[in-house]
Length: 177
Figure 1 (cartoon, helix red, strand yellow):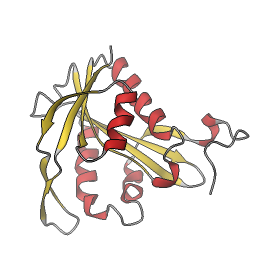
Figure 2 (cartoon, one colour):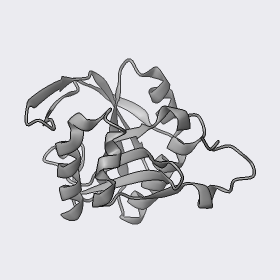
Figure 3 (spheres, rainbow, N blue to C red):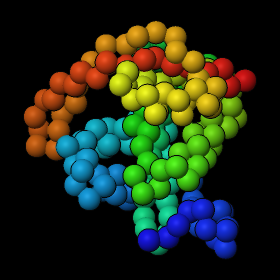
């Protein structure tokens, strides 16, 4: 496995932060760990093609997709994403072997710069109330807790079954411009 912090490897030629393509969707399942989100990934990609969302990936040519971050630009929940000034980040994950090497920081910063160019002013996201390591990560990047969120959502899994999720979370946000 390649080490990210190896000083002989230059960042731009080693890791690519880029928009996801349709061909990347199977890789987002991470060798079966997230197969249950297959339909959800397809829906998100459809929103990308309609200009309502973004899908970012971390691509290491030798190892494939090792991270992802999705952005809702528009939502029926205006407090999350209003299509003009407020965007919502979700589905942000980095494979364990690549954590603590600034990969997540670089991906988050890249997405924020892209949103600034699109003239968005605020970014919000939810972080699990029990996930203190992630909360500290976001706080180091300027995010602040603004509310508690029940974290209730649902999706249709890869077998067509409706799944209900309850992940109590903190709603956090950051002013990016």
